Image (cartoon, rainbow, N blue to C red; front, side, top):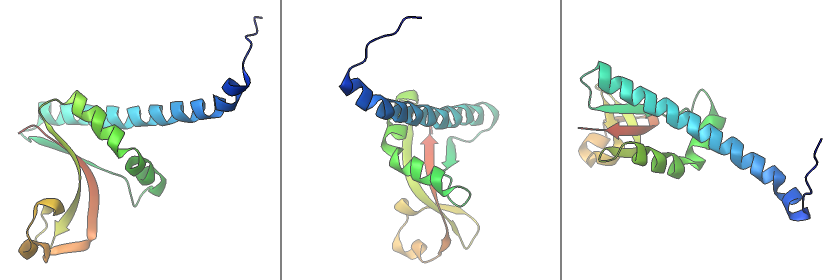
Length: 127
């Protein structure tokens, strides 16, 4: 068996390296899921966008992970879907049963939005 010398600085950073690898692996799993489902949506439907609901009620830890790493997730998705709109936004269910992007509506419609049904989405739009 061959043993490799390791410096004090390297020893101090081993835990951080493992944490970074775990984080990067988790980010890539999320991206792979979104990528696969966006492609599937484009192939099998006439939709021109894919909406990925960021987990919240089912898993608050997953939600915190998504929000903490949102910039990196969006950066990679923008590279994977050039010339498409890739964004993170809040969407809410209106009293009429339709989903509304809260960032794009005026104050008149905002009064019809149900505060309880707000959800965070990553939206990929290729229209």
